[in-house]
Length: 281
Image 1 (cartoon, one colour):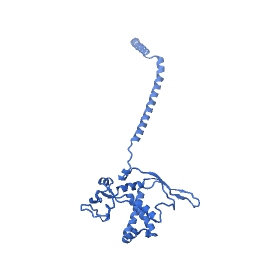
Image 2 (cartoon, one colour):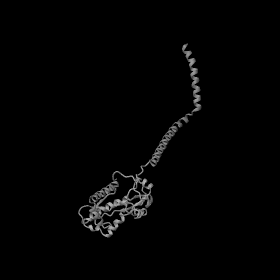
Image 3 (cartoon, one colour):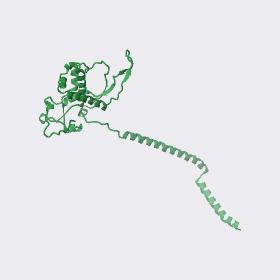
Image 4 (tube, one colour):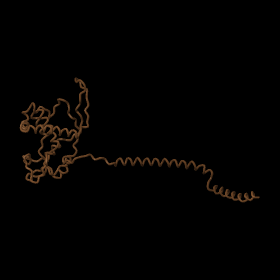
């Protein structure tokens, strides 16, 4: 009796639910459609997955390239120069002439022609600069100026001229031993200021050393085999990127003062308001 009661209560409900569910499921899903939809979904999911990956890689690569192009690059250090501002980049390729016994306009022994060649590259009258130019070049506005009656402005000279002057001094000292008659001014200075001239020699060596160490030549010397010479022979004829020195001279002559303006330069007396250093720079 109890079993019949449970069967009579549960069976109709279970059967009804089953039938209703089967009918609903039959309306919504066709067995053949289900068999086709499962692989299609998997295929679409795979395509979508790889598409996302490809797009992500492209975006990352694009951002990398963009960041590389826009990355700040260190600005090369430089010092303002009115010469560079006026003349611009005059660089050109040149091959140094380093063969032993090869003649050049500056090669000794000292002759009138050789002495004139050295004078051409080492002598330019003093230059005149404005206060703005002096300040931008990093020099003190307390530097020596031309007297107002001579036009005013700041006194300056090319550093390149000074360096070549030092090289010329070493060249003179070398040839002075055999040809003192060619250097009467040097003879007079040595006799009058022997200690100063000895220190001037050391000063020039030191200035040239600093210049060469400041801009060390990145090029290289190789060796060659030469007929008649035992062992490797150095080839000093090396390529270099050089500035146009004649352009420097031409611009300098255009900014130079007349000889009368610089007359007795080392005898000038400082004005009353001049700033004096406690020791020589």
